[in-house]
Structure formats: structure tokens, C-alpha cells
Image 1 (tube, each protein chain N blue to C red):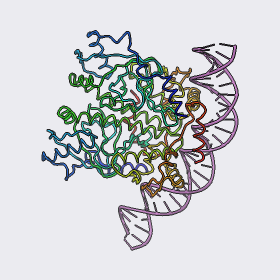
Image 2 (cartoon, chains in turn purple, orange, brown, blue; image 1 turned 120 degrees about the horizontal axis):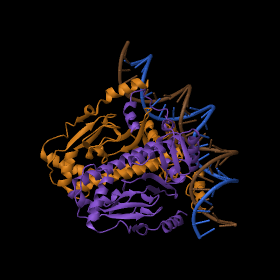
Image 3 (cartoon, rainbow over the protein chains, first blue to last red; image 1 turned 90 degrees about the vertical axis):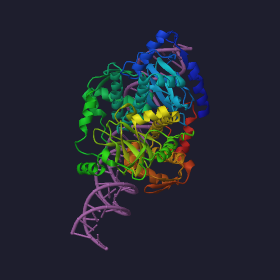
Image 4 (cartoon, rainbow over the protein chains, first blue to last red; image 1 turned 45 degrees about the vertical axis):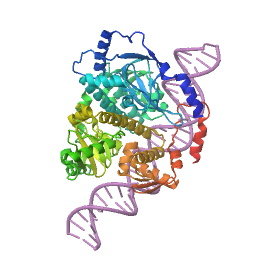
Amino acid sequence: MSQEHRMNFLQTQLSPLAALTPSPLRCRMAPLSQAGDFRELMRLLGSTGEALREVSVPLSIWRVRPQAQILLEGQASETVYVLRSGSVKSVRTLEDGYEQVLAIAYPGDLIGIEALHGGQASTGWVALEDCTVFALPARDAAVLQRECPPFETALWRAVTLQISHAAETAEMVAAVSSEARVARFLLWTAQRMAALGRSPRRLVLRMGRRDIASLLSVAHETVSRSLTSLAEAGCIEVNIRDIEIRDLDLLNNRAKSTRGATRLSESAPVARRELAAA
Amino acid sequence: MSQEHRMNFLQTQLSPLAALTPSPLRCRMAPLSQAGDFRELMRLLGSTGEALREVSVPLSIWRVRPQAQILLEGQASETVYVLRSGSVKSVRTLEDGYEQVLAIAYPGDLIGIEALHGGQASTGWVALEDCTVFALPARDAAVLQRECPPFETALWRAVTLQISHAAETAEMVAAVSSEARVARFLLWTAQRMAALGRSPRRLVLRMGRRDIASLLSVAHETVSRSLTSLAEAGCIEVNIRDIEIRDLDLLNNRAKSTRGATRLSESAPVARRELAAA
DNA sequence: CGACCGGTTGAAGTATATCAAGTACGGTGG
DNA sequence: CCACCGTACTTGATATACTTCAACCGGTCG
């Protein structure tokens, strides 16, 4: 049974080679354009310092169609991707065919870092919308690291960012009530939007309820219900995938789930406050 | 009560500086011993190739007491640690004081990688038992990466391993039924033990039920119940923290949770039936 | 137009959180 | 040494929140 599913799966989603089509607009060979792209790449990776030197490797940009796989789970790859625009979900297909969403990636996020040491992709990566990615062959990445120390720094920064993202995701799922999970998901999305310079109030979810549900480990009906319940509470306004945050404080309250647990009075809050403010 | 618990906690656990005491046995300055330690470090990191050259940086090993923090959440650090022996939990303290366990680390795992680019620890790291760690100041790590390419490779490998571990953890928590989560946790632990060359059948859990519960996002009572239920089913034998896996296949079955989900054709229900029957 | 997909809503059963009590163990102080 | 306390684990009873099954609606696409 999971057999034909798998087959079907591969047929409709195509192979990554077919899914990734070189962008006619951006994938140029002209050196100047490359240099410009490198600065863009550095900016994407969160590099603050100016590293505007030209680089000796070509930087190719690829376009990815919605629902196309950038990387198949378990696929050996020699290329690491840096998401440039759009959004991507990280998925694992469980034995029973259930598609577990593990993370959502936004511009600047790394895709398939395991390629850097010749490993296999530990998750699949599926575009949620039209995306563009920088494709960085491992050997080119190695060259860049040697040539351009700021790049090396930026790469490490990006990698550790991925790890703290994983922690954040875990924190989202950890909430007791499903409503709190959904609330946290919205807050998390808002935070990421803010970091990207987009509006943290008006969210446009690129994934369906089912994906959100999978990410949060709840039933998709529950996501739906939680959203309407949050909307009724006045926290948010929901229009299918367009969500507007109306009352941030209220939403924050709903996001607190408070599993009974190791309650330890009133010491910690200080540091978190700062985070909440940002 | 929880108030004095915290106080007590801080007193006994001390600051990380105090908690980390240099090992009198291993922290030598003699170059030969360093070289030996470097090979050990490489082995820990999973390096297959032989890189038995001496290195120009001193490798210090630290000892960590049970319940002591190797790294405090949010702490700025310039040192990355490689767990050498023992086990460690990665924790985040939520606003309400709940201690969320995010991961369990075993020998070879990296602790505080964010130090490599001068970031802050995104989670705290608490020793579950007596541990030893390699302490690698960021600049030494940089030197090693330059001096010894195999080290660089090994480091990347270790980093990406952390990321796939995060995916595995997420998969554990994603299970619908709490019994499945516990089963997956046991299987995961067994897998890690096997990878370490220890017995995957006889597990000695170093953490309490509360920690497991937190990791799996269930109530600790539920962990307890699930364990006894698995034991009654003949999968395992439980003796507080000593667990023996009796029937791996059975345990595997229990670990399959099968959220309805992406129903693929009409065959899915079958699997559920079997599970329900078992 | 009908089929399909994504989202919402309803109803019912159950799994699990929660509260509460009881046991066992290890340390501490008398 | 024993009584005592605190902690960790187990087990029980109850209520509720969630999953699940099912129907329905509004789009979009062929």
C-alpha cells in the first residue's frame, strides 16, 4: 500500500532534477551580476560586515515551483541551498505514508546542509510557493569559505540559526493545548516575518491547514477550530490563509499553556521580556 | 516549595564556571597526551579517516557533575563542547517556569555550537550524570579547521548530525498516542546506544520520568502508565530506570501511531486495525 | 457542469491531563 | 540506629480537550 503511494508520490512531485529549473532571469554567467549576487547571498545569510569582493565561483540561482521538491528525503546531494525567496517546508514521510512537517523555512534559511560533508538529506524540502534558491555546490562553498572569511562566519551563523529554529519549533509543539500551539505558531511566523522586514501583523500563510496541523502535531480540524476560536476571542482575523493579528498581547496570553510542571515562582521572566519586546 | 527548590537548585548546581571543573586526570599539557586526545576527539566526532597528527592547540577536558549546567540558556559563550562521556539534556525554561527538554545528547554530540560564531546558547545544557566534555574555544576550533581538514569535515558532519537528531526528536514527539511516543523514545535511545557500541537492548535511562515527559510533551504520569502498559504487552521490562527491550518487533508496532492524515488510496485502515488489535 | 480540494463545522467517543493518594528509596538529623 | 523528609515513581478517579468520522460549503480546474 505505501508502495503505490510512494510511486504515485514520486510521479506527481517529479524528481528534484525536473522540479528545479534554472531561472531564465537570474541564472546568468556575467561576472558582474555574480558579484552582485554574492553580496545578496551574504545579506541573506545575515552577514553584517561588508564583503563586496568578487568571488571566483559562479553563483547560480534556481527557481522552484510550488509543491516541487528541492531535495528529496534521503537523497545524496553535493549542493547546499540557501532559500532566497518564498517559503519551504521540511518534511519526513513516515512508514505509514503520513507526511510529517518538521519545519518551515524562510529566506535566508539553509536547505540541505548535510551536503557539505557529503551526507544524505535527512528531510525532504518542498516549496510552498514559487521560490528561488542559491545553489551552492559543496566544493564551491569550500572555496568561498577559504576565500572569504566573512562567508565562513555567515555560514556558521546560518547553521546555528537553523539549530535555534529547531528549538523554537520544538517549543511551539510543546504547548499543552492545541490552541496555544496555533497561537505560538502565529507568533513564531510573525517573528520571522518581522526578521525579514515584512509586516508581522498581516500574515499570509503559504501552507494549508494540513501542513500546519502536521507541524504542530494536531488534527487539521483542530487547527481550523483553534483559528476560529482565536478569531472569536478577538486576537486575530482570519480569512483562509490571510491572517491579521489584532491583539498581540491577547494572542501572547493564549500562547501560554502552562503545563502544571516545575513551577518556580517569579524569577525568570526578566530575560524573556526583552525577547517579547523585539 | 518550588521556590526553595529553585534556590537549592542554583546553590547546588552553581554557575557553569563553578560546575565545570578541570579534570585532574585528563587535562594535561603534555603534547603526547594532547595528540592522543585529538585522535579521541576525532573518533568521537565520527571521523573515519586517520588524522593522527599532533595539533598546536591544547585540548582540555572538563568534568561535569550530575545536574550541573554545562551551558546556561542565553549565555554568551566562546567555547563549543563535545560530549565525551555521559549524557546531557538540552533545556529551555519557558515563561511559566516549565522546564522544556528539547533533546538528549550522548557522546559525540556538540554542545553550544553557536559559540563558533559568537552567539548565545539557544538552550541550556544540563548533565544527567557524571560527564566529561572536550572544551573547544572558538579560536582553537578555527585553528584546527585550518590545520586539519579532516577535523573540519568531522565538525560539519557532527553539526549536520545534530540537525538530523533534531528531526528525529520531532518525529518522536509527532506520534499521536503517548504510548507510541514512549515507544519511539525507547527505540530512539536504543538506536543511539547501538551507535555508541553499547547494548541496544538494555537501556539505562539517566533521566527521570519528568524529563522524558517533557521531551515527549506528555504528562509524566502518562509516561509511567505507558511504560507499564508496554511492559504488560511484553515489549519491555521495566525496573525504574533500567529498561530491557524484550520484543523489538512488538515495540516497533506500538511505535507506529498513524495519524489518519494524508490518506493514500483505501488501504490505510488495515494498518490501524492491526495496531488496535495488538 | 461535476469533481475535487481545502476549509469549516458538528457529534461522539476516547485518550490523556489533572488532581490526589500511596509506595519506595535515599539522605539527614535526632 | 530509627524517624523523618523530600524526591521519584506508580496507580486511581474524573473531566475535558482532542481525535476521529461525517457532512457541508466555496472555490478551482478539467
